[in-house]
Length: 129
Length: 129
DNA sequence: CTACGAGTTCAAGTCGACTTTAAGTCAAAG
DNA sequence: CTTTGACTTAAAGTCGACTTGAACTCGTAG
Image 1 (cartoon, each protein chain N blue to C red):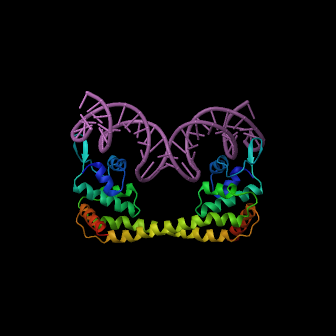
Image 2 (image 1 turned 120 degrees about the vertical axis):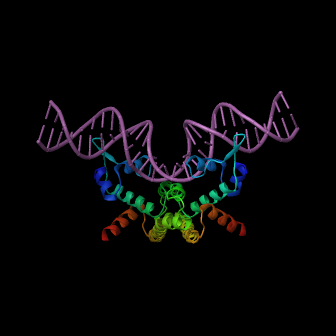
Image 3 (image 1 turned 45 degrees about the horizontal axis):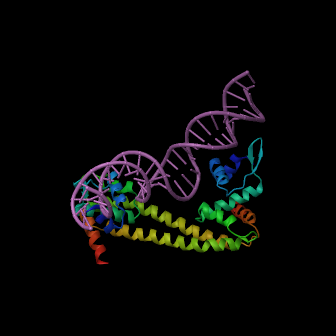
């Protein structure tokens, strides 16, 4: 497969694939006439990368997934280890967003005539706590 | 109040306050010996800015809140208008995070011996849908 | 022959929300 | 006096994940 085919399959730009290679999370593929040619194993690698991105992992964490364990550590153990942190982080972020929704509703219920009044109200509320 | 006092009250750095002024969401305060001095109205403004940040608004949206309406438009109307989009956006983001959690659990349940096998499994799953 | 499309490299640009740095000013304390 | 500490400015740097641009090389179709 040529790089453009891989890009199409995964819905990425070719530049993204080259970038992944550059930062070391995709191994350099073999070349034909200086052009990258990808085999199945490269495709599988990329599938893992993409799934990890979808589950909220950063590229740095993906690098950890691949290279942060002693060779031979089985995938379930790797995923599990990284998931601990990530689940906590996701729940934290969900909470933050839900708090935003609450605050949004509250601020919408103001009866202020001017925005400065809103500010005054907010400060009073804050002091009470 | 000096800029450092304002920063302390709001838990911001002085540079952030100057930045807000620079991009126009805080009005330039009066000066004493070339130094910024803030009065109550500036404090109220900043309280509104901070609350808006806490509810997920970008600085651009905050600018809209202040200057994107015909003068005299009451705060409830302003907040409401901007809230529409924001609530939808927040729910969208919450959904994405919850999907991540689901995917995370699923990927953790793999029994693969090597990460490439994970990739293969992921691709097969994807094709089924 | 030449033009085209797809690939290559390396460096630099993008986004948002700030922070950091460098160089200068100024009032109060020692 | 001089030092200190808080302030001033404008410009540049940061972060992550890419994208974009410029300049170049191929193989192939007309």
